[in-house]
Image 1 (cartoon, rainbow, N blue to C red):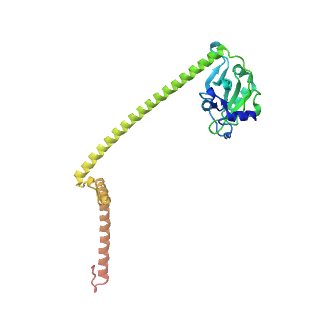
Image 2: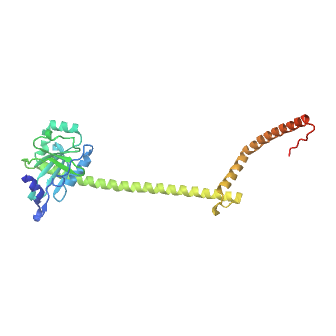
Image 3: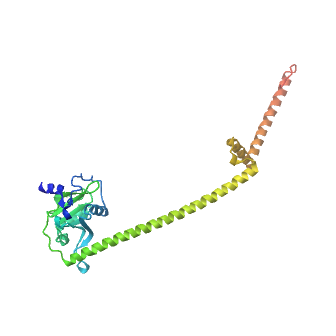
Length: 296
């Protein structure tokens, strides 16, 4: 209870300025549903948002040493920069898969190679069902995702760290330099990708514009030839465009010989019908000689 009161009030920072403790931001937030699953990179982003300047310096992928003495590695490490907060060092293992966590918890001594320099040691889960609180070693804390941040499900207890070695300081310096280099490389790649994407889009636009202009010129030429041949001015608008369309269709059929075939077929039918009518008239004349048969 006393700790909760201290957490809400906060620590006095440099110059007596009050600042919240590291886990005050999302402590009251509900944990995220189990279907929210963060990647390791997304977990690292949330760590950056939680352990941020000016209160903290955050390092990613920190070994216990360098060179041949690189040894074990922590996924992240944050150091508090306020003497009033104890200049605590927090170490983090990021776990986004339950199987990976179960392997880790079977050999917790592996983490101790870096944890021995830390005031607190945490496992940061990528989803709320990755780590069960009952599975935590006694000296570990648990951070789990909320909808937008991280929440301390179990606060890491204060440890009794060993004095920081020169090899560990060298590893921190290398991590700091690597993080800066990575950020620079990301910015360079982002800028290069933007320029490349813009150039491709511009080239595609120019190609489409050239193609559209060429197609429009062809259409203009076709309309011009149609107007000259038909005497119909397309640009002036048509009062009965369906009539002109039907006439054009008829001409096209005639060019194909279809209209001529239809006319010949109709003529044959008409000739056959006329023949039958004449035969019927002659038959009537013979059968009724006293009456005059008229076709009027």
